Length: 464
Ligand code: GDG
Image (cartoon, rainbow, N blue to C red; front, side, top):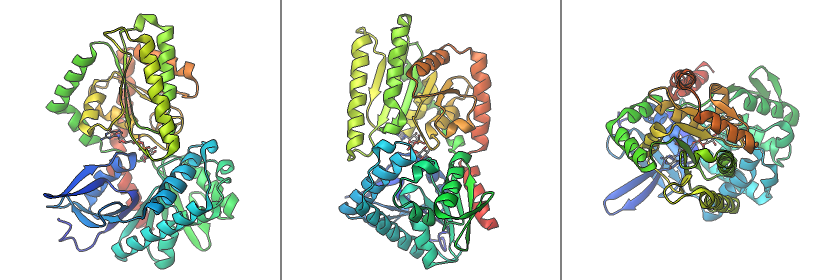
């Protein structure tokens, strides 16, 4: 069914940024995929189910995607530069993001940013109410839109509202530092169903609602001012079948061979992430350096391919982190390169998803070592692309994904020495053990894919 012939949306997704950047050209509208975990999972879901996706971006308006035989409609709201600065770079990225990732030293709480956050959440609510029919489900995503559910509920008490928080929810002690903590909790408690990745985050949220707001909790139900919200822990899935299919395709196979030829026959260790201080890129580089100090016999015999996708480049702390990573790569390559071999191949740009999948296929080890991460999809994508059940995933204990992937080699990314030991262990793991671990992880990620995740939440709200 095309978007035009669809009687009404059914599902209205609302998030800060949408799945595409749109450009007006002489030949019509061009689109380019945006990079990030939310888009990776939510886009295939909306393509399957159909509906409307509301986000801010340019040009303003509603666009069928793809233009002919559309699967859904993308609606762009326009924000003023000052709103982007205060609501997005300010409150969202300089207050809530560091707070929720337990980087209290990095938070900046600015009242005018909060006012703007409230205002922009109101704009999103207005757009969602206009797009959604009375029976449609409005699904609000992530920490940039924590106040929006309440604006929707106040305007339409019968609205069917789902919420999903993609990043960690911190402990009560940390969350209590947020000056507008009650307003934020109240905003989220306007949802019928509110999801988090893992039980620890859901538990932190419930504890905050009880202790800081005075809400009543009974199991996963939280009651506040006559409204009951069901709080669920369910880790978001990936489109497992699509990744496995791409990994098995002849182009991916060819590209994997090209990477192998370029690097050599020795093991490849892979890191892929947005440039972000939460992702632990610097700590991982330091661990590689310690490993190379410890094991001169591995010089020339292991290569780290590190892909860092530019992100939030306007925020000064992100610019600073990028400089530190650049310097560390320079230092380590400067110390150990021998003219033919360099320990780190560093790419500071975006790759196509097909190229990433070819790399997942090629790399013997994936290093996913964030200091704190809501879930982490790269870990799941690596597992999905390992068609022969070999390869080793080294995964931070502080990524939500560690709960779902206990067969990974789990590490504490704050301990550089332990991380170096874990990489050493991964590089020497016997093939039987690799297969045993990988098979278990693949089975779970395949069963709990994006369709499973979306369907469970949609069932929850039907049961309402
Ligand atoms: C947030 C939470 C949670 C990366 N570089 C490129 C590229 N990527 C893709 C990866 C993956 C996605 O971006 C990153 O997802 P993550 O989950 O690792 O991290 P966040 O962006 O921080 O996502 C996170 C997620 O939301 C979902 O709830 O897991 O904890 O922080 O899919 O493949 N994709 C392309 N080129 C790149 O260069 N095409």
